[in-house]
Length: 218
Image (tube, rainbow, N blue to C red; front, side, top):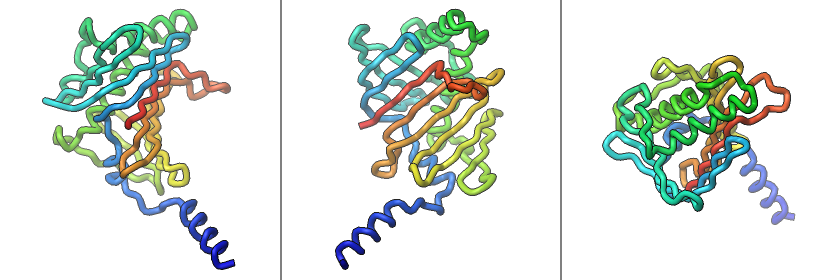
């Protein structure tokens, strides 16, 4: 009986969500440097790759090894600037841009600049994730428990910490009723080991995903 009671107590303690978590603690667990696997889907296209990523000299770069293409680079240089730098011919950002432009035409999304807007938001997120190195203001306002409002680089976003799921979710509004949601999951060794970017329509009843990228860190 004592053994069963101990198991119950341990199980219940594991399920109790943490209620004392600050913005700084949560954001400090977000990282984009390391290695692992990634999958990017812009229906009907998809890419799967292993990667290594890092931040150096104010630039973030992910080296992708795609089986059908060899090594390519997904880069966000000059993170000291709030505006994303131009896309060079060897930059995988160009493929993302082209894929979303083609999706807009084929699926009649009426959003030809969706790719540019998505990449600009990712630029901001990369910039913020290295805010200490770049000397940026990292503060956000807690509107209510576990719900934070951020206005950084004049970009508005809402972030929610689901303490039960151990999931940190950010939402950015795009044009019309489009939005980007970013999920940070798999909290291990005080960092999130999985990041997921999704572009969808907030009013869609079936939640069509126009883009999803999963990044799994080792």
